[in-house]
Picture 1: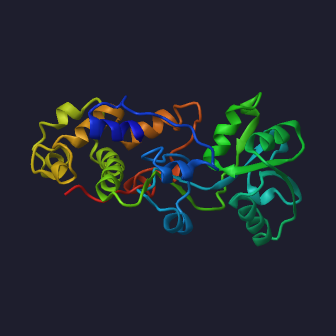
Picture 2: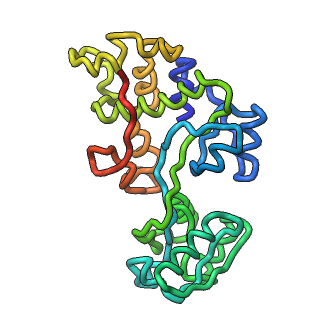
Length: 277
């Protein structure tokens, strides 16, 4: 996402300074101006949208809390976890979601809470609990750190809504628009079949919508304060949304996450962007 923004604004996807931030420090860094965009596993909620002096610009990844178990447990569904012990990071919404799920399904469970994700994962791997719970994307990432990742599975149930996306500070509407429409451009490009490989060919298209998106007709990019070829810059630099998903987190990446609800709206998912017109 950040490379796409750099490509569209500076015409160079490498002109990015990445600042690693903990969950505790991420909002302060944005508020203070240390960073211009917070692009992390941050869930869009009403409290965060209204109390932090920042705006969410869209959803780059629709996530939700899930469960990971050892294959040897022979469990195929979270509904089979009655009386299980569950490792969880304390002080997060994860604990509340966990309680709601088990109570709502009339199941018993034991919580084993830890101060950090790393501690919880180590405890799970050592056998101190039957189950580890976190956002599903986090489960796939944590599984990679285990000694034998193939011995563990992420169960299919998702028990919460965790829409993740970039944030920018209040007060700069043009920057807000640019970051927001960079994401929307990537999604629209995938929907139109525009890829890194074929974008130059697509520039020759006579289709009105294609001409608007790629800047060969009209001045939509200039209305954003960008160049007419703003979408071309993005796609050439990082690809469309589907390409970036597959490369970074998809089934062809080390994380191996199925596209699922993050597929386009016309392919069985819920990923959808306003039109470029």
